[in-house]
Length: 489
Image: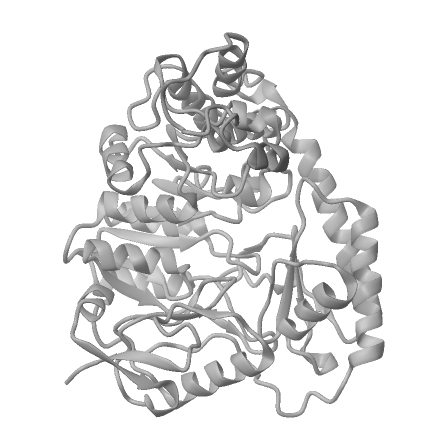
């Protein structure tokens, strides 16, 4: 645990980007550069909405403020502080979201034709990286909890099997944790990978707190992974779209930065950069106490929800030492099917009738993210609302779809399928064809179908059921998700 600044080799009380922006403001600079709103003077409506302080530091790269593409001063210093805070050899500031970080990880170690071992329940950003790079996925299908219908982690035995059958693979990609809080045995997987000369890439989008809180699952960097994409904005307090890409010493910093610069903007937002800088400082100095409080709030809410009956707020009791090696107890995942309601139905009722916005609702579960900004009173409101929803809306569960994850039939690589000749067909008539695009519920953004996978009747039934229950389906060119692109021939 990193509880306070005393565990760090650098003084974590500094925030170089934030401090440079404050100095810039005090200089009363007359701007003849971009952005064109000129510190807000050109857009009064935006000033009224966001505030003068915000617009005054929405600035362009310049010598005193450094440059994200090629940092040599304050951004470089901020990167060093972030790396120290997370126990990494280097940290890159990401302003294109964790999507860009995931893609940079894969593209840094995999080129066209290289194999990468990964679970199929990855975020679409990982599969998009395969489309861009031409890397070939070797899917390790996760275990499935049949009661909850959710995918679990990667079994060590399955990873060993994949390594044995694909010894030329360049890397292993791991979720730490999954959307539902499930963690694989990351340390053992990392040891296996390194023993077989493979890199370990970790999607740690939902695990920012692992580096700072007590009694948390192991973080990617602590487990010895080579790179980790960390969504600082999800549980670390920074602005939406801001993330870190962490790396160990086994990879060249310059090479990774060049890969990042292939896709990340050259106009890095200083609002996002400063939010990362300030949030890193907060967590480095006070992360232990912050996440102790978060853990206590999640524990309280879980206990109270389970007292209602019908709901199941699951936690560390799922741990089995393998496909559920550990569990992120700050994830308030709740199984709803026993009260006869799909998770997405509870999600909609909470928002529309009670003014409560949770992270996601799927076929059988809801997820409330508990983090630095939550308060006990808000959780009491969530618990009481769930109790009332059960009383008012509970019904027979007969006929409900009973699982989330369907093992895919992968016919060809995502890149080959994406760039093949395609045409539209009604989803209802697509059984047996090869899919040319994505279908997913968002959030969580894990594809039901990805390019190169065979469409089955089970998948069509799942899509139909998800739409009927109100899931927000995305990924298809047809915005109504009535038609799907399939490969010709």
